[in-house]
Length: 115
Image 1 (cartoon, one colour):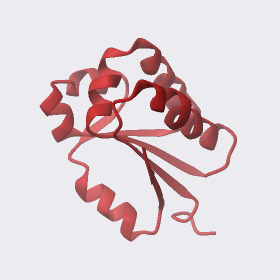
Image 2: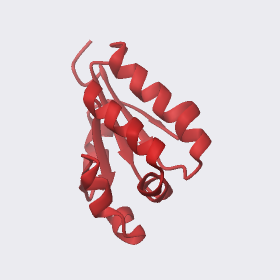
Image 3: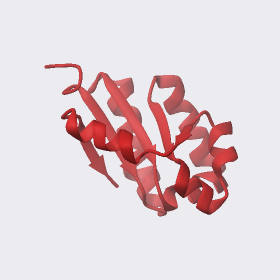
Image 4: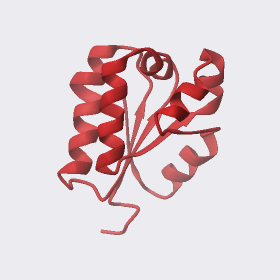
């Protein structure tokens, strides 16, 4: 399997806290920490950025994911719209205009799931 084929990109856009805890975060963390995928990226996009900026439990989980080696990215435009760019950056998330990167991930054949 090529490196790009062993790469998972999780696009988290839901503002639903239960979806974050019971699906997105649990799978993303385990996918990296248990070695299910070599490269695991979490993209914070849309309402998820607002939710993450306000929820201490989710922020702690994000820190655990970063320590496990999950690459954390966020859509800068969405973060700007919610006024949370600085907060996301404080959490160690790379905040940038992500549309072009996501397009590259798709074109490279990386596995992408959305929540």
